[in-house]
Length: 183
Image (cartoon, rainbow, N blue to C red; front, top):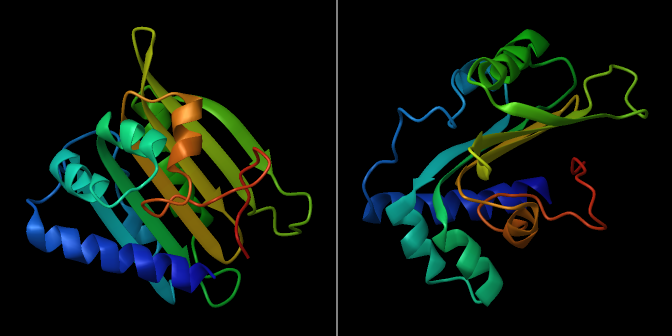
């Protein structure tokens, strides 16, 4: 399931990368040093859609609520890593990515730790960036001993908007209002 989802996302990203300009790389919402996190991944997908790429992709989305949300976004950055066995990524590298968002002034809203993970690597983090009273960005990081998914969204969004984006652009589909790492 993980490979199929990331394969579709990768094919989608490659198609639009050829048709559009490169995404902005200087924004503080895009995670830095993800290469260090995923250097030993057996499968990896990294891509960033800028505003023009999202506008083009929005033509292929049928759900009107999702189209409305995508039209408000400036960019999406997705990073999916699958490791063949636990212990192949450095938790310190992942912590450095978390620290980047803290250092940039993002508000850390959620940390959810898995009770079923004896290695204590199973963790979900959510950060939000505020501009005055508006939510201007969100980052969701899902980590387990063998998977890491990070989705960073730049644009004016609400929690309801995030629900409309699940299942699109590499954002995991989740049930019942809970974010869960796919096995």
